[in-house]
Amino acid sequence: LVERPLIDWNLILVMEPMTILGALLGSFVNKVSPGWLTSSCLALVLTVTTYRLTRKGVRMYKKENESKLAPEMEQGMKDTVEYSHLEEDQKDEGLF
Image: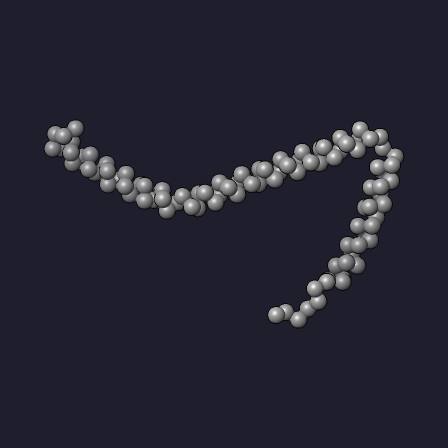
């Protein structure tokens, strides 16, 4: 067990003023701007976030499947090599 507090108070002292300022500015901009602009900005942020999340998820999925399929692919290549030698032997014997 580590003997340190669960809350990093130095980090809170740095982050909290910016968080409060962002909330104040955001609420002011929300009051001043028309509803369609707020909705459009929200839709834009959600679209960009969804695109980035989906792209990262697909990359992770491909990476995970490549690492899972690598041993199977190696085994498949060994089987293919063995099968190609079998075909060559059968061609020599006149079976193909």
